[in-house]
Image 1 (cartoon, rainbow, N blue to C red):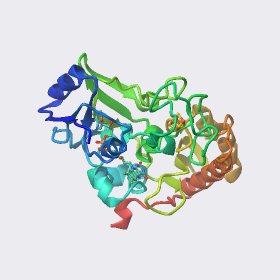
Image 2: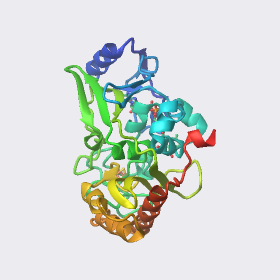
Image 3: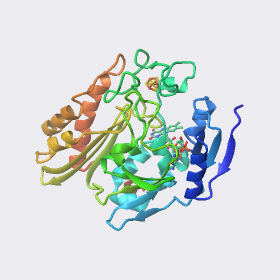
Length: 338
Ligand SMILES: Cc1cc2nc3c(=O)[nH]c(=O)nc-3n(C[C@H](O)[C@H](O)[C@H](O)COP(=O)(O)OP(=O)(O)OC[C@H]3O[C@@H](n4cnc5c(N)ncnc54)[C@H](O)[C@@H]3O)c2cc1C
Ligand code: SF4
């Protein structure tokens, strides 16, 4: 039994005060990732600061036509929110492709961004892992690496970020709002998660004394031609091998604007402006989609057990863009299911 203290934050300022006062403390929101990590002795916070009752549970329209999602909006409430279902169905699809209904009821928006990798060695304290214990080595590079990164990896870590929701937030150009001792700041979603480099212990650019308070979506939701395609070992309750968020704005059969992001292929959700530029102005057909896939995957590199993911990603990109162009998304949004 590991002892830890428990405290409840009264408001955002109090939460920031408490985390700034104790570098070994951790926020707890839904607890669906943190408690698992505590049970296997990967996380050992001296104190849990419970933020689950903070007033960050609303979805509000912004002045410029977007939406501001409170950090404590549960994943299920977000997926079933009418404005998300109607205007951002790609986000609803991604959320509903993740975890299980019970987990989505508990999991929060902020916690989803900050969930940690599913690399088995990270969870196994008997093995070296640079992310868990900096400098100890990476067991996955020469070990079982079937689920691991094909893009952006380093000599220190080849883990992937497992979130579904984050892939779409990246594709939609979301912004993360955070609060810390110096006040509030906004982080572009593309800059929120990090590549491993030689500091794989840091997943994000959130400072240890900061709290995520909201995620903001811009007005454009790509609600007509989109898909979220998640390829996994079984059809539900499994993390992705490769996931693709694809959205198009079409003028007849010509692509005016494209969004393309990959999940579970790198330490962060993966997007590359060059791949989207390769689609702009092209006819929406498999040849153009394959060219964009080649651009997006040009630096992909496999390890002993995961080279198949490069080919899988290429085919998944073409399929996803085809679904988006046809207006036949892989996962129906909740609006259509209900
Ligand atoms: C069996 C299982 C299957 C799953 N399958 C999937 C899946 O297929 N796809 C997918 O995307 N996810 C999946 N998940 C992950 C799940 O989505 C995350 O565990 C969940 O989103 C985390 O949210 P939470 O509120 O429970 O976070 P917590 O566990 O409470 O916290 C996670 C981390 O975030 C920090 N934190 C939480 N909120 C904030 C905040 N506002 N500001 C700063 N730090 C914060 C905590 O300190 C902690 O370090 C699965 C989880 C489980 C257990
Ligand atoms: S891939 Fe990263 S998380 Fe997995 S063992 Fe290596 S250092 Fe640890």
